[in-house]
Amino acid sequence: MEKPSGIFDRDYEWSQLTRFVQYPGGEATLGVVSGRRRQGKTYLLDAVCRAAGGFYFAATEATEAEALRQFGTAMAHHLGEPVPRRFEQWDEAVQALMRIASDRPVPVVIDEFPYLVKASPELPSLIQRALGPQGQRAGSPVRLLLCGSALSFMGSLLAGTAPLRGRASLELVVPTLDFRLAREFWELEDPSLALLVHAVVGGTPAYRREFTLGDVPQDRADFGPWVIRNVLNSGSPLFREGRSLLSEEPDLRDVALYHGVLSAVAGGNHTRGGIANYLGKKSTDLGHALTMLEDVGLICREADAFHGKRSAYRITEPIVGFYHAIMRPEWTDLERPGSAAQVWKRSQATFCSQVLGPHFEHLARLWTRWHADVSTLGGRRTRVVSGVLPDPANRTSHEIDVVAFSRMDDGREEILAIGEAKSGDVVGRAHLDRLERTRALLMARDERATPETRLLLFSVAGFMPQLEEMARAREDVQLVDLERLYGGS
Image 1: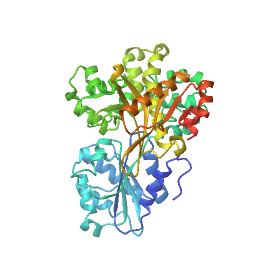
Image 2: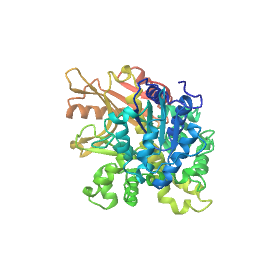
Image 3: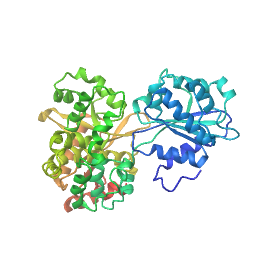
Image 4: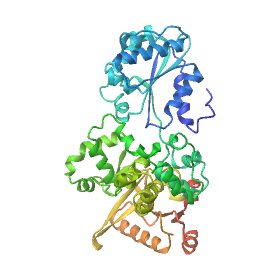
């Protein structure tokens, strides 16, 4: 099947769906598709059904009886039957569904599957039975795709002792667009503007058209006004999006605590102890909340490069981080018409330090992990993280934004490169000197570091000419500006 021209990128996802749908076997098969809301899952699956003549059913929040009526009506429409089918229970409906194909594989999509299971918890077990030996004998080559945005639920659908574990032949997660694709999708030529936009809304496709009606900042001077009219505007869908993403997860019950954790992380408290201090709680009280926020994909835990038992938490969705850093503390004023411009004006320092700075550091790690080539790093990287390096002699510590590791033939790790990312400063010789001292300290404390460990300097504002000249003469120094971040290796 040829991917429709209206679908941006998603080549991998389309190829996996096509492979699943076109599998020629005569038995029914199961696939699970998940991902955060607004990523285009529905658009993809609807396009698959249209291309292959499949059946698409979008569930709603409804009682079991109402859902069965909706399902029977949709099936009758698909089959061209004049009268809606009547199902008294899901066992009957699932059996009819598994016979919907005849002489060829037919894709069948049940979108927002968690809504159905909420009203009918037995549904996964009924599908399991339909996919078993007895059900297969009475079935047809249905390519059943279950889709949902509740990540904790979808993640558990095939896990542990769940009824459908071991039944799926496709488990596809539709991610947000990465920062390079997001720039292309938003059609932003200026990489500095692309960085600013991505720091606020990330790579969620729906924010480009549905949520902003195609409003794209024209240049850097228009970025602030764009934020005011699209994100800080109480009449815009993006205004409540950072809060809504949390409320959409059905497994998150103590919403106030979860918002508190996210505010702590957005404010620069990335360790479990730091989050606990911010909230006035014991760190042992936060285990469940942190695990749940990880499960639903709103935060991630990243191991420290130098301390196996230490980790840092990061908000994964930029609009959530922006909401908690900028909007939540100013919510009273933002709900008053005409206050957005003043809030944005007095939030500039916070935006730079708590939103743009950490986001640029994250993109520096992504670039090092996925885009930097072997000649840049001096070897093949296996993982890229950040870390805090203790400096006992000076009674301090050094935060290293980028630490790239490689694994040697004998299994030992080697530190290929360390890096520093600056979103505000023009980077000069002093920054390189500091990074060289950090490398020397690291070599004294960690045998994985060597004199060949590369030094990476990332900058939004650019580099001083003296440093650029020095870097051209040194293989161990790499300068990464925005042009290289977005287009080079």
